[in-house]
Amino acid sequence: MLVFLTTVILYVFGFVFLYGVIRLGVRHGIEDVETHRVQARRAEELAAHQDRTFARENAFLTGS
Image (tube, rainbow, N blue to C red):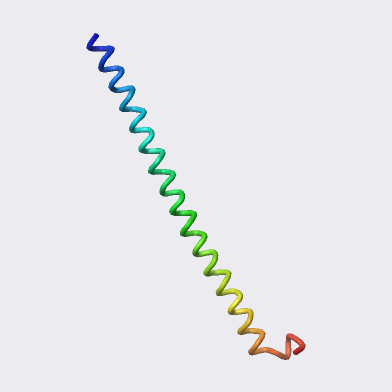
């Protein structure tokens, strides 16, 4: 009976531990995606700003 009880307890704690590890991994993954999304948005805004600046400084190239 003691072996069965020990097995059940370890089995349950194993699932609780696995749930925690998966939850932690998902949370870190979501944080990485959010960070990458912000960096991509900044890079896009910077590229657009550089394009506008280039076009303004070199208006003869744009045909204006």
